[in-house]
Length: 383
Image (cartoon, rainbow, N blue to C red; front, side):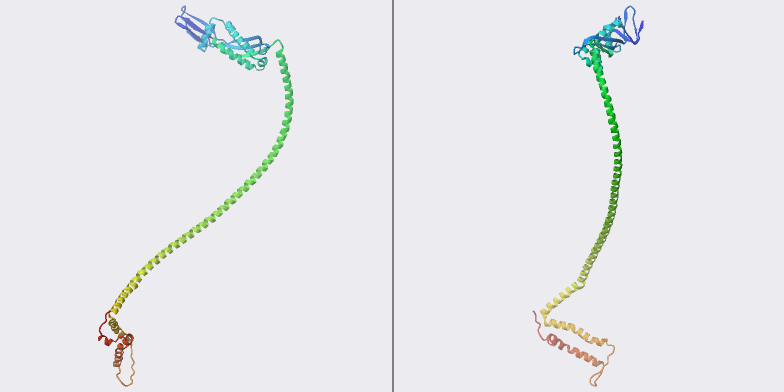
């Protein structure tokens, strides 16, 4: 047979073939009649008024505190559901609520005893957090989780809290008066400050405008200086480049002249070498050959002396005769004048030529000291 339950309760099936028991939270389960049994446990959230009457706080002041707690059995956690079943299975919601309430009240009293009235009164959040923390750690072992806890009320029978409230009220009123005065003061200060800030803002605006104008003028002057400097640099660079170009052209021209001069020098050197070779071929070699011949002749002259000289004279006699008769042979016309005695005509000319030639040995002897007619009668002298 199937049994079902809503999400606010859990079913526990025990008996035959159900060891350990089966726990189902919000669902259905099959149960064998007579040999298996089913029990239900509520999972509803329980609201508890946790009251602690006349509990002495840490300074010995008795107060009463009421807290509101929300608790429930946790059905989604198997371990907590098993613990809750062991603790509360077969009990009603009222019985479960009473057990949870007693536990919470005990923890609430313990927290109150460790705090002062002022701490509980002024810091309710801290008190609530401590109760919630301590109670949760204890109730979780029962399978119950504390959903929330809030401190609802604090009161006492000795007007301690009332006096505390009066002091607080007086303090609040004092703070209110001080706050009002401070507010007026602050308003005046803010108003004056606002006026001052307005004037300062106006002055600052004018200063910023003047500063902006100054910055503009300075930047413009700087830009003008930079532009003029760049223009001057460009002009100077242009002139420098022109000078460099002219210098390069002049260097190239000089280099060309150097090359041309070198070529001219080379040509001149070649010409000098050529002329030296030509001079050597035309002058030196023949001169050396003639000098050699003259040296040989001089050597012969040393050996043969008068005979050699005579030989030279005899070698030149035909040339002398040719030179003597040469003018006669080149004359186109000869006019001869006769005194009336002796031969006339061509025979006269021939005779005069022969007469000149016959006088040559005598002339040579007067010039050289060598007699041609006596040479053949003298023995040759050797060196």
